[in-house]
Amino acid sequence: MEYDPTLPWYRRLHWQVLSAMILGLGVGWAFGLPAANAIGWIGELFMKLLRMIIVPLVLTSIVSGVASVGGGRAIGRLFGKTMGYYVLSSMLAALTGLLMVNLIRPGQNADMGAAAQQEVPELSTPDSAVDLILDIVPNNFFAAASAGDMLAIIFFCIVFGAAITGLPEKPRVVVTDIFNAFFQAMMALTSGIIKFLPIGVFALITKMVGETGFDRFAALAKYFATIGSGLTIHLFITMPLLLIVLGRIKPLVHFANLREPLLTAFSTSSSGATLPVTIKTLREKVGVSNKVSSFVLPMGATVNMDGTAIFECAGALFIAQVLGVDLTIGQQAIVVLTALLASIGAAAVPSAGVVVIFIVLNAIGLGDNPEAITIVGAMLAIDRPLDMYRTAVNVFSDSCGAAIIARSEGEEGVDTEVRH
Image 1 (tube, rainbow, N blue to C red):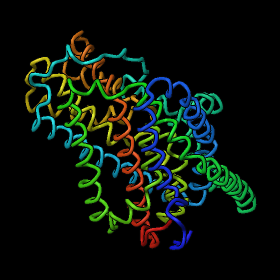
Image 2 (image 1 turned 180 degrees about the vertical axis):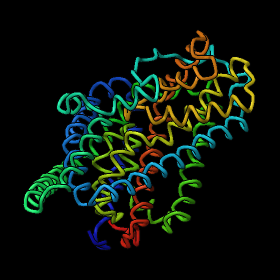
Image 3 (image 1 turned 30 degrees about the vertical axis):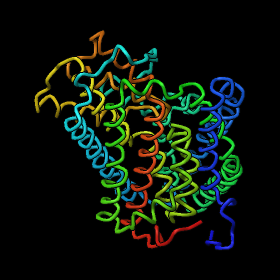
């Protein structure tokens, strides 16, 4: 869509969403739990609408995108670039978390007794790389789709799209056209749901502030600052440098084009729920083709968690500092590597990283420590705003990867201007 300078500011979606966030903060702070109970269901309804379209959108997007890529060699090249970028960005994120926790040392003299605690929920994660590989291949695609198992869905869609490229011309064109048509229909449905984004954001922020308030942050202020500073460095320094060096893209243009997905990610705390907004924005504003965006973004929402890598690395070292455990350079290297791998296995749902942190703690022998479990409970009590921020970082990293890979594939219209 071309930029219309005559469009009033209040008609632009990003200003509507930002205004909804500010209004939600005010209402939640002023009226507390009653407002959360009265308005929160609207936010839950909006989240259900977003989740409703994830599986059909990913299915049609990936199949049509892979079918348009071509043969196996082209798919292999695209897969290699995608995974190479994800490993690089996640490793840089984990190292940033390591740096900040060693500079600030938030665990020294931290008063965990004064910190509110919350029960740590259960979340199943693969126990090994072999289990992860086995989980990727579904026994039943429809069961995987019903359960929202994104890795299994992505795997099936990629191999199904690749199979379409091997068909004779006539059936290949017919099947590809069908999936392209379904994809266009899903994009139209996505556009309709996004129109209600400001209302959903207002309800979600009101519910969050009304339920948690701001009283819990004092005891964990240094921890909060450590995670927040690591996320800020990665979002505003590391990722822009990758855009410049790898993609020859102006970071300010990319930030401007990503306003709606970033605000949506911050409000929903779920990169999975934000995926429909991200796909729509990458195609219409950033200018990435469906061939690239359909391959990179769904996989990124599942396995590329830069913000989670920062949190898991810094969080594990924070717990070690609180317990008085002095980790060697070798042990900290294990934390970085484990945080990188654990972030890949983190579910694209709110606060999943807090649970997955036990994988990192197990790697340094603190997973069964009862005091460590108590500290994680305190961390979870103030995790929602941090989770909102790291979800925005996760989504921005996915979008940067799609833009960089699109440029490497010869697409010239990527982030050439700010598109409204």
